[in-house]
Length: 422
Image 1: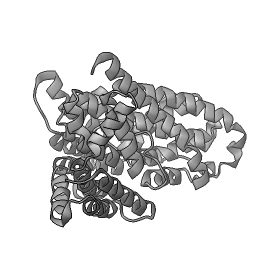
Image 2 (image 1 turned 135 degrees about the vertical axis):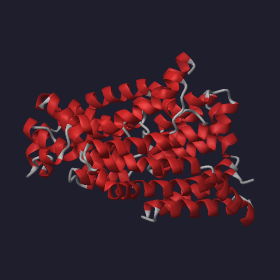
Image 3 (image 1 turned 180 degrees about the vertical axis):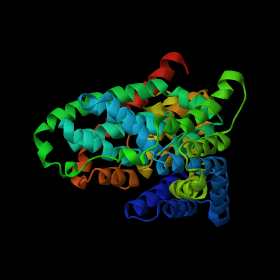
């Protein structure tokens, strides 16, 4: 219905508007409208394609809204901070970098957004980093890398969106990238240690270390109650692969949130905590609606065939469409969630027709969406830099390291499929 150039122009308009600080959801909707009109679909055809794309996002939006209960409970009850504190405290200052990376990984893994996970771990990381003599860049890289590793094996919005687009089980998709997550964690550790040695001389100049004492232990619940909710989520989602009982994330994620509130004795604050969690996921849900609109235009264009033709021209196999599309779309939107969603919604049909198994295709797209998702026109770049009081110029210097972590996960996911066939 639409030309490839129209779809690309629409995507370019959306990117320009996002860079100029327009609300991403509106930018994507306006880009979709412009792309459809320029692409020759006419006003009626363009609007129909946008609405169709947005409709396709509704299952993911509902599950993401439900996940807000768990995210809100983990954050507001202090459970997330307790998990991080226990990991960092248990490993000690000699293993400070692995500790903060592991803490961020675990918090992402149990369903907290990566930017919130970094913000949660940051005070604890800065406190232990100050005692261990580590620089802020090394600590932030450890947190971001650990978060990326946890993100691709978590019930986060990007995983939910990719699973819905390919109609695969969420738990299966989480497990599919377990090996790439371990690879990403290892690469994170290597790069963080190297960066720590390289920046050893500027530790004293790290203003972020000044006055940092970490989170107050008395504000945290006991560890058993902090992990109770996440364990319930894992148990419910594991019922399908273990005994064939399907519990949808729409049920499992809020159930974990309610268990967290009960275990931490915050049940009376259910309304307040749920509202807080909703405020954290509402922006992502709205973003996915805009993402669905532009995905509808791209999906209805000739971009699918043109990208496949380009891959063949470069003598690349058809399955490379999965990681490449994940990388490009996440870079365009500066968002793992939006990138994984657009790529999955747009290219799922072409990948399945090429004979790539749905689970493998979803996993490769998901991993690819972590490579250049932290560019400055997205919120993650600024949220993580602000969490450790880092200047924009210093924050920019970390992007190549973050990209290397995401690229290692993507390469591992691709090699896993190429060698094992799934």
